[in-house]
Length: 320
Ligand code: A3P
Image (cartoon, rainbow, N blue to C red; front, side, top):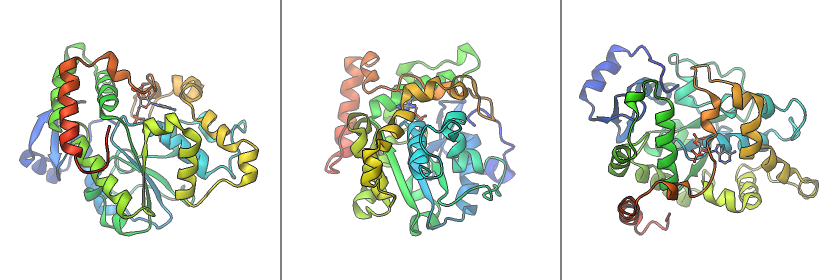
């Protein structure tokens, strides 16, 4: 999905020639479209999604900045919402044989990849979908309908480290490898995939406060710290709370166990499989820990990002 070269339409090529650009993460350049940054081959897919997607009230859309733990949350969502149809750990449970990105596809990256008319016929209700698009650039129908938005955010320091590794993992030629210093500066300036990070997070944070029936704001670190509480909170938000019987029979624990980093990473499908576009699934499972940034940041980097976080999030009630 990242490296595939789309045949850009004339309209898209023209638009690109006007957009501000910066050095790329997963290609030579990223472009600023509607205030956020994305590689050129994503632009057409985002526009198709914006123009064509027909939202349904029952839709559940996961929203993240890349590398916030999307794969993890896709698996949790799928297991949670389908737990009656697919009892956890049943031998042919879809999560044991398919990658979470196949079960909960990205709207712009997967469904609108080949043009404006993806096939939604195979979906059952509620449709589980995902996107990285910022709130203000979501199709109006998604903003205005009863569609539920599940937002997952992660400490920007770990998100950055994960993004830097990911970008370098996708690089085919060694000489294109990007240094941590150069990528860090771009991240701090806001020029990261779907960034600026702060704008993305703050918009959804505000929506979750103003409209808590529509947007739930989850944090990677909180799910790591108190997984059962956060999973139950998500189930309540999605109006499929766990019954006492389910809790007593260990369903909550089983979902968490099935979707754990170790379990998912070691499955045959995730250790040897590939996306249709060629990227190996294993690049979505690197370390899966909180605080890996401490192994990379210098004191200067730490100070610089602390300062930016303080300034950007001031007064929002959100902190990292
Ligand atoms: P690291 O690079 O820090 O290891 P995304 O899914 O949004 O692309 O994010 C990928 C990050 O989530 C990677 O972080 C990856 O290891 C981590 N991850 C993937 N599956 C996970 C899981 N089941 N539990 C916790 N973290 C997970």
